[in-house]
Amino acid sequence: MAKISGKYEIVYIIDPAQGEEGIAALVEKFKAMVEAEGTLTSIEEWGKRRLAYPINDLPEGYYVLMNCECKPEFPAELDRVFKITDGILRSIIVAVEA
Image (tube, rainbow, N blue to C red; front, side):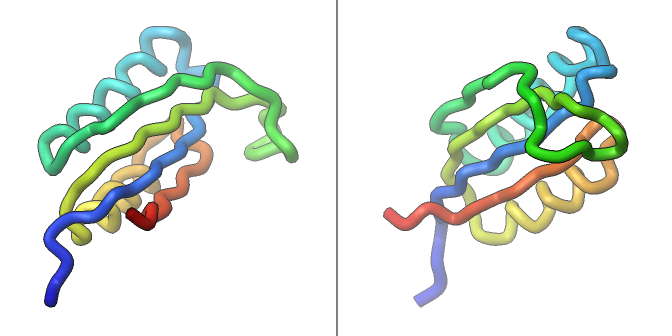
């Protein structure tokens, strides 16, 4: 039987050079995307933290964690949008076992 929906944990890192307004806009953009395709369970903004290793010569990044429930096709689309969005340094989407 095909999976109707799944639970996912999404972490992404925003370039802090975007500024407060730019960061807020990106967080809102991805929050709206998830809400349009499924249910946003929780969102935690961890804030600016030091990276384990420099990414694009940047020592820090702004971390955001989202938990959601959506159709299994949606994470691939969300990952595609993360990759083409300026200001996103890294992202990971993990399926959470129920």
